[in-house]
Length: 242
Length: 260
Image (cartoon, rainbow over all chains, first blue to last red; front, side):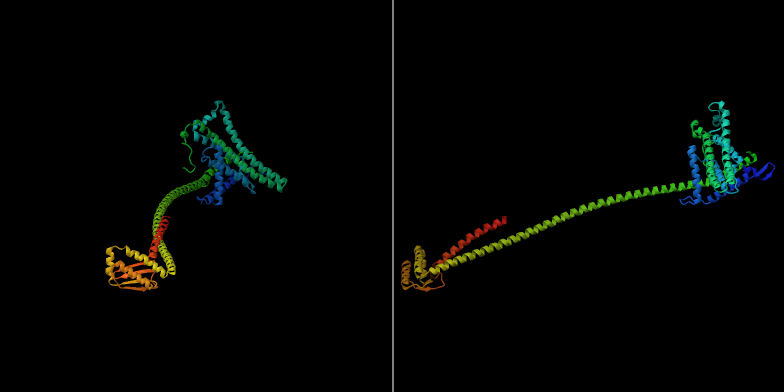
């Protein structure tokens, strides 16, 4: 029994190691992109919707609602990032029920990569909205002495994101494998069902925490800036604008 | 628990690529579709609002037109009522006039008929009364009564002045006729001759006739003159006087009816 899909290597050439993590990640990516492409090729703009379009709109509308409730501002810049986090993690966790599928989120490398993306996205969004000075000044608040603690806090929450998701998914897979050995009949089925719930909850928690971090990085803008257009980015942009 | 940094880097790239792909194939089309639907709904709502306003304007125009028609209808009805009232008053006036005329005609006819009836009744009453008196007197009449009737006639002859007596005498030369209802006896005829001779102063032929249908009394006739004293003349005078009294009473009653 392997604890992480990273240990299952399918191809290796030098430092390039194509593990099960990457393969299943590409599988999930292909599944998501093809499904999205297939559904969105003919979107109806009238009142009559197909069930799949309805599903996508409910999903997007739900993510928008969550971002709007948490960030209490325009959700459009966060939607692709936060939405992709939730959709990718949820899909990986849900597909864990498929025999033979090893969820990439059970890999610490994957969760670390996602946490690093959040770690980088937070200052990017903050700088984009508020500018360099205003964003970096937050690390010196309330006093410059707090700079190390603020930096450690940033790294710690990134580490917490990665380990929380990895630990939950990995523990679910490991516990399921162990229970399958001990009680091979009904109890693993219940555990798999519980894993589905846990996987959705973990995806939700990861996306919500990322939104909270993004909102916190840009929230000071509302109080420190008197004019909304004072940021270098010139304010928020719609997602469909170039 | 190991971290494969190549996998980390690859997963970062994979995630960013997935973000880009989903942004292109999922979020943007879905958001565009939702925005387009919202625009369609907004356009539909706006069109519905515009149509509602148009309908409101049309309804207002319809209400105003209805009010105008109602006012015109009321005006027409008022005019028609005035025409009807005027026509009714005119017809009522004409009917009243016609009724008055007919009533006046009827009243005149009724009065005329009443007057004629009263006159006929009066005439009949006078006739019957006179006939009754005349019958009673005839029943009572006899030769002695007629002999006594000579006295009034002789009184009248004696009351004539000289010129009238001369005229009668001249007329008596042509002959005199004495007519009575009962035959006079010879003595009475001699008395008549003597009296006429003494009154007129001439001798004249005197013929005596009796006519049972004649009135009770005596009639002296000579060419151009006639002297008579009969009960009929009294009865005729009585009848005329009674008719005058009854006619006056009928005229008073008719005037009272006309006033009522």
